Every structure is written in structure tokens, then in C-alpha cells.
Length: 77
Image (cartoon, rainbow, N blue to C red; front, side, top):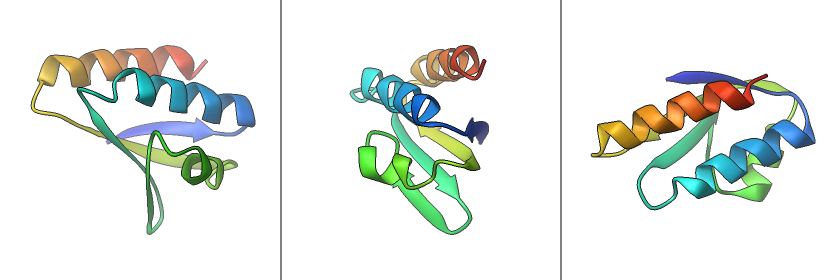
């Protein structure tokens, strides 16, 4: 599982855009405590703003998961 600081509206928007980009290849769950939301869900992701969250990408295509993880690292800054 990857970690991400969902500390602002912009970070939430960036995460959602990334999840939407990979929507056809990677299913992304955003996890905080016992809450799990789809990474493409605007309301779900926005409900977690202000928290460090876990990002769980899942796909049969390991290369797509790796590309997703690399891009996630770039938007963390």
C-alpha cells in the first residue's frame, strides 16, 4: 500500500485526476481507518481531506500499477 497526504483540496483533485487517468487499467482504493473509497469518487476522496491515507492500486497489469505509483510520487510534492 502507498501513502499519501491528502492535506488540501488541490491534493485531492490531483489524486482524483490521476485515478481517472488510470481508470481503465487500475482500480484504486483510498483508505483511512475503516473507510475505503474509490479513487475516482469526488465526494469520497474529498471526505478524507485532512488525513494521511493509504492508496491501494489493483490491476492484473503490473506495469500499469508501477506507472501509477511513479506518478503518485510526483504529485506528492
